[in-house]
Length: 468
Image (cartoon, rainbow, N blue to C red):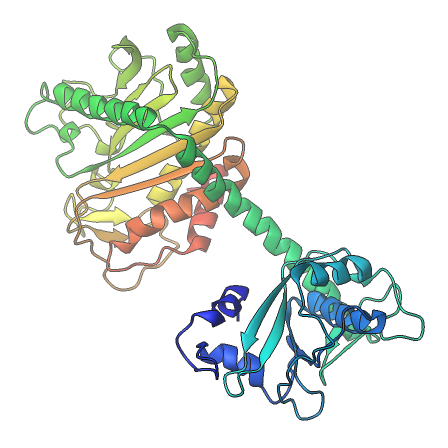
């Protein structure tokens, strides 16, 4: 049961108390259980003005903190576990009073939340003190009461019985140490997620409507430009990407200095020097027909020779980069290319590789981070990806035949749009944390296929090691 659920006892919808306040069944179980558990301790009413009672409560709270969190229900009789009214000689607890107990006796101090709930049968008001469960360190008693319930410098823990005592066996110490290690591991993973999700929240909160409009206009102009270019191609040209394509849109935000066009060209060229797949994002070629050009205030490249009717869709790229930190790239599907080994089993436009796209998007993320490092003072990178021509495609394992795919997974939707925001400097270490949540809903279009985190992590690692 969570703290939120405890707080909800004043307005939840199951279990009517004598005063008409309703409570959830799990709240009732917490308050009226016949026996304690390792995460729930019952106490009779304690006078927090009395030092000995303060020590009793502190010992219980420290033990629960070292256990991983839990609740102390105050107002339950020691023997028959029945609720008892608060004596008139004991003042109603306050949050400050609980915090004062923790501050005096515990090191490091931790947060406790106080709430009052009514026993669903008797209507007696009970105090519920909830201990947080995400502490990283062993909690010690920093002060004690001579001859009293709590002694100085003791790491109290919950033991079967249940009771709150110091650990005195190797197994009990290992349990305590393991809890701290796992808590730190969880904190580290949460920090990684926070880097991705938290930066997205900051960026979205600070992105003005005007900035979003500019990015949308840049994307629309890029698509219009590509459509104008393909008009010059023969109707049969594979570079028209009749079976669909995918695009990526990048927006770098921050107080970076806008580079001039020659400098931006050098930056794009430098960013593309790191290549994990042989054909990375925003390819920078020197051949005149493919070389980037200064067009309409952007640097633009279209990697299509108008005389080539059989261009591999997976390399028929069109891309644009602006000095304001905006970038757009459009590319066809490698699965639709001639001689890719799919022809006899899947007609063109009917396959979608499980392995290829995490690698492709991973490369884009790394490319964006490298460009951000050259611009400097970039605070966030927003990326959106679109996929078209998905309807009727089936998932295959063409990109890595070591992996097996069971059953048929076919998309009934034609288009997909996904977005994410991440902080520069984080993609190098948190690449799977960015790519997986971005692509997971895309793969779910294929008969609810669940994209495994392990698959994305392993394929990105192989991509960075240039293993194919």
